Length: 310
Image 1: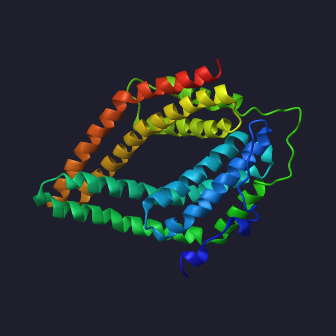
Image 2: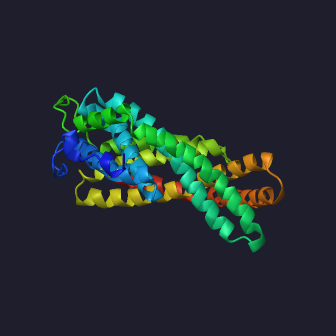
Image 3: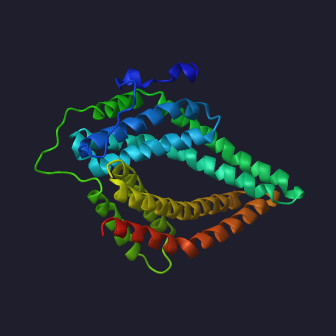
């Protein structure tokens, strides 16, 4: 069966021909449904490319759409009914399969760039090193393909599409302000930052990146309901959170790459072990660079979030 024959359309999930739109003055629930509608369409659009593997960006964008849906359901899922939490959990299941392959894509792409700068005599060993991870990626990709071809995935798509048009009406006595709701993920991020020691463990900085990503996705949702002045401030917050993610993302990628090289060094010697050691040294330097600047990027996020609620 070809990738094209497995392509799903929005109509097959009961979605309207045109994406759902929400105006700034619409109730928050309309904005949540519109956001879910946009992201499920994005996920469907990138699925064929994810299956084919021709361009790693397709898988990346499919994963981003999934993460945005999870974030929306975590923060505002109660607006679309009790089905939101089970759907969010199932999105997490799919995210694990996408994330495993994405991690290999990032690692392989980066290794190729690094090794290209090495001397000619190290190129052959460098290619063997890359081939090792290409082989491991192929195994992870087969697992992902099975997940995308499963009944569980088809059911998940239908359940997300149902949330975009759910008849559930939120209680009138509990109004939901999408912009005011940004205070919660900002507060959690700030608390996590302030709890860190001067030289935080790698895992803690990774957790910090996840908190920052939740704030960014919440701001994307809030932006659709914002008036002009608020929209400008949210735009500033979005840029700051994106920069924050980039710094901590570089840090995490470096940590992962260095750890992969350590595993190679445990079992390889000779030229490939030598190349792995050189790569590990570069990754530790990249990790140090990110650690030197992440607090500055956090300060920009904090200032932008506080300005929004001033």
